[in-house]
Length: 543
Image (cartoon, rainbow, N blue to C red):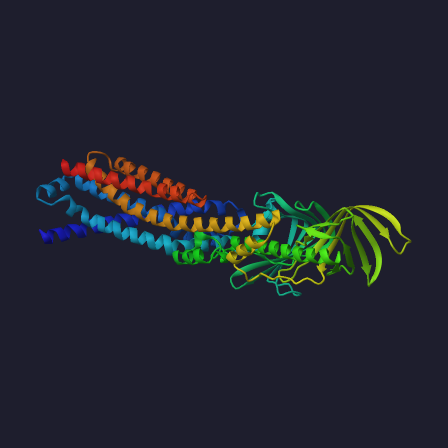
């Protein structure tokens, strides 16, 4: 009996492996072409060679869907033939138990589940990254394609639109790898609600692109520009607008949990500040804290001296003397209800501004390594000092960028998110802006933790589904031996498909913050499949 059992086991394993490999190859090819439909629809975005490379790379990620169903189909076909030809009945009559018969299939299912764990946790994430990288490494090509199609080019929370564009490779006057010259440009930065917070229009924009250490950086300069801030309600014109910080494009290998291996996800769980979205939220909170601390120090100075000196930066050659009694969340207040600002040119007073509505806000273009502010006065009365005190009215007057003289800047660029949270807790009566920035950082960290837990559990759940689908196809083939093989496989395919949908729904709930219920929903489908296999096996044994 033992030699015969060994022959039977080898036969079953060989037949199952052969059918699984053949079916997987067919399914993977079909699904990979399906995955390439979207990039193929982008006309000239991919060359023919890039398209073939994209399809070849896409075959590996598609295996997480093709391999379980291919193995289930192989088990169904193999055991249906044996059951329909009464081989199963003969082996049972000869004293071979179903447990012994199912052992090689179960062992193969375990091996398949291990292969699926390796694929989903370590191999497939990297190939997802390669797929994204094929579509996104050439920023100039993507931007040119967007302009040709008349749609905005989106990077994180930034959208750029232009009428036409010129591409210059290796420009001579800079170390940039590529220079893009855009004409008639509009750019907008959106908030968490996807509504524009700041927008700029310009006659021309120059974008320098740098590829450094596996990351892509964009540096922009806009000329003859007009900007509007939804937060402050300010409309400003400028000959040149140059953001002080380069735009870091997302890295498809580093900034997307989908492309991270299990080890990378676990490291990211312990160090969420390394994630792109968390890092951006942390920088915004850092800016808000530094602004609040500067406000506090200025307020202390005003309460004692009742004046504060501001010094122009960059092209602003003037200095200013602000006469007020306090500064609360950026609002300047005076006991006489009127805030006075004297403007100096090389030490000589040239204008005096008076207003009951004056604010001191951090300049949006303030560099990371220093603080600069904008002084905004509305409904201001202007006294022209050299002209004998000629008076006129200004609906709005904006001074900036300005450096505050005599304050100790608190630099927090190296502070972690946890350390910044501790500082926020110690600030008395924080501004709405500071509270919102702290809330956004907490949300980003929680969102990332939920995403990591969802990814890890989803990969394990799909791997277990592969084992259960093989077992379900086998027992259904024996139980429904008088039916057609495809009809039997349909009964195995539909529950497994529903299981995958349930896993996806559970993963989405976990990412939305419902971790416990999402985890329960994710695994309930596998539990139902396991119970169905046990019931069908019990019925087969009974009869």
